[in-house]
Image 1 (tube, rainbow, N blue to C red):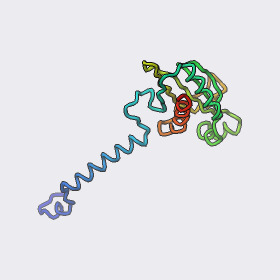
Image 2: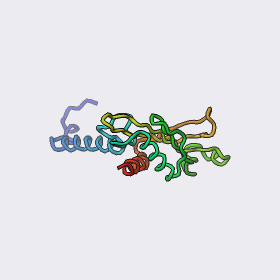
Image 3: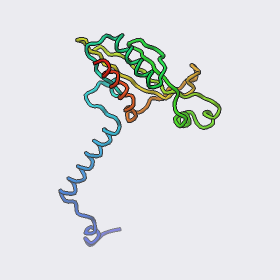
Length: 171
């Protein structure tokens, strides 16, 4: 359609600098909000982005033993207690089992567990970073068919609290 008059163009909303500024502000705030809610932890190494604490002045053995005690008190069983490979796991809730394993598999007794893999990173000068990542594991009792699904950083809070408890006990 050929426009011969300016009437159609006059119906478009005018963009002034204030509306552009508001839109840019909204985009920046939205981007910042997404980063915060996604569990982004600025200033932390990639391996420490899920949950981590720095523990100064303790030996790896002291840290591992304390971590084992804290996780056991929360219902976890210790799978491995080596400083570069700590593993804790416990049975997942019924809801989590249905979400990750499905209703039918859960009804027939398929096991889903929460597995936490942690390690110590030597920071030098007698300090260590205890960091972990949590997984939901379907078919955990079958080593061949076990399927680990990492939890998102948004679900890190319970694990960060456990690591904070480890650090607090070692003060």
